[in-house]
Length: 97
View 1 (tube, rainbow, N blue to C red):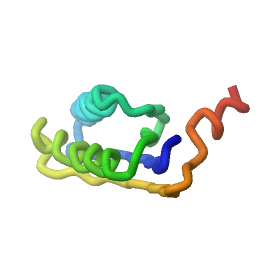
View 2 (cartoon, one colour; view 1 turned 30 degrees about the horizontal axis):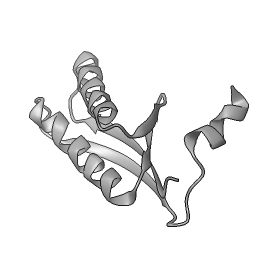
View 3 (cartoon, rainbow, N blue to C red; view 1 turned 135 degrees about the vertical axis):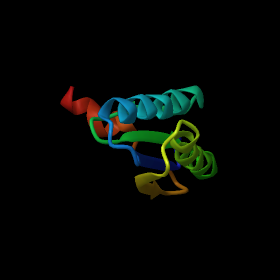
């Protein structure tokens, strides 16, 4: 049971589209490396897990773009937290596949 679902859109403060895409790819690779369940969408990536773990992932997602040369980064984050559990990505989207 997941207690938290977070959607994050990371926007490195760079104008070159190829660099933006490369940095976002690194962020997604990091999310993948965490072992959390996630789904990449066209505007944001949704991650499921426990609140503390996901918040540390969100923090790291802010650091990666700067480490890769972006002077700064902006992120849009949506958080749904319920100690009794949240609907999973699959429960929300499988009916549309």
